[in-house]
Image 1 (cartoon, helix red, strand yellow):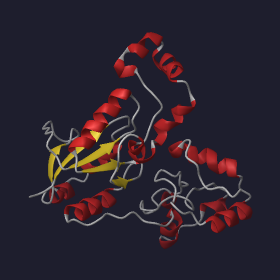
Image 2 (tube, rainbow, N blue to C red):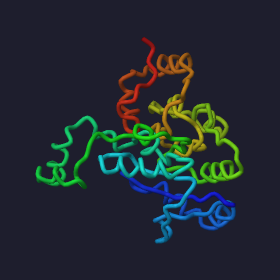
Image 3 (cartoon, one colour):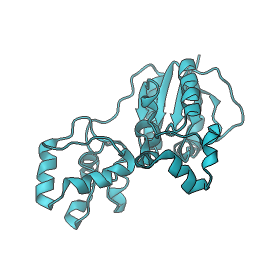
Image 4 (tube, rainbow, N blue to C red):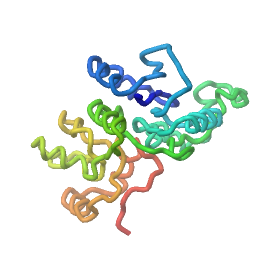
Length: 251
C-alpha cells in the first residue's frame, strides 16, 4: 500500500509547495509511489487520513499551534518543508517587535487583537511546537532534494541532509569565490543541498538552509581574518532567515 501524503501550510508564501506543483511530469512519477490525499495547491480534494504530513510555514498564532498539534497527532511522519517551517524563516524577523504594535502598524486597529485570526505571538519554527521527524530546508526547497526525499522515505530509508557547507558545492562547480570580490557570503557556515544556486548566479549565499551542525570553526576564523570580516556583519546577514538563533562565535 502506498503511503498517504498530505500538505499543510501556515505563515509563509507557499513557494515550497509551488516548487512541488511545478515538478510537472516528475510529480506524475512520484504519485506512483505515494498517494497524495491533500494538496491545496493542485487539488480541492482533501482527506484527513494520511501517513506523512508535509508542513510549510512558520507558526504565528495560538490557533495555528492547535491545528499543527492536530496534524501531528494524525501523522506517522511529520516533515518540516522549507525555511519558514524548519527555522522560523523570514517571519521570525518580526519577533524583535511588539505583537500589538505590529498589528496597529499593518492594520491600524488595536481592536483586531481580540480577533483569533489576528491574535499573533512570536513566530516559531514547527519543531518549537511539535516533534518533527525530518527537515527539507531551503527558500524555496530544491525540487530534486524533495524528489530524493520522497523516494527514500517511501522505500523505508532514512533521508539524509548533507553535512558540509555550500562552499563545497560552489567549488565543485568551479565558481569564483565571492569573498574575493569583497562580498559577504554565508556559504562557509550554511548547510549544503541547494547546489550553490545563489553563488552560481553571482549572488552571495544568505543562509536560507540553516547553519551547519558543526561548522569548521578554524576555517571560519581564517576567512574572518583574510577578508577582515566582523562577526556582527555576519550575524546581521544571518538574521534574515535565522533571527535570534545563535551562530558560531569564538569566545
